[in-house]
Length: 136
Image 1 (cartoon, rainbow, N blue to C red):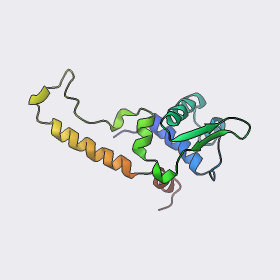
Image 2 (tube, helix red, strand yellow):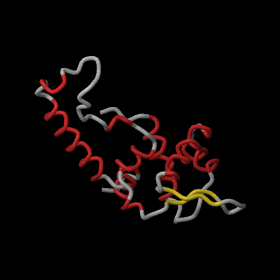
Image 3 (cartoon, one colour):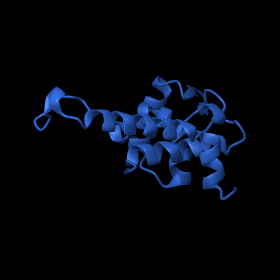
Image 4 (cartoon, helix red, strand yellow):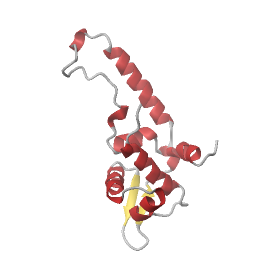
């Protein structure tokens, strides 16, 4: 499974928020620390805010913070928030190459999608942070 830049950049931004002692960070600071494009990351931050993963505040001490503890945010949550469809493998039972109900592979693809979703939900931002920072 390929990881899109949406998910990668969103995770890198979130990891900055987990590593800053709970203080808020501006998009500018996040992007400077991670060498990310500001406009793109601002769009991702907005999507994660809409999904309830982060919060924002205005003012001189404003910026972004996590809306819940990092152990309650999963990789699947992040992928859904930034509209990364790489996690969607379920058989849609439609499309130009679909054989419809006569196809016997739909069950297989649905089972793989369920397992993949379970795996993505098993990785929390806290665990990803440990891996990212080299702790085991």
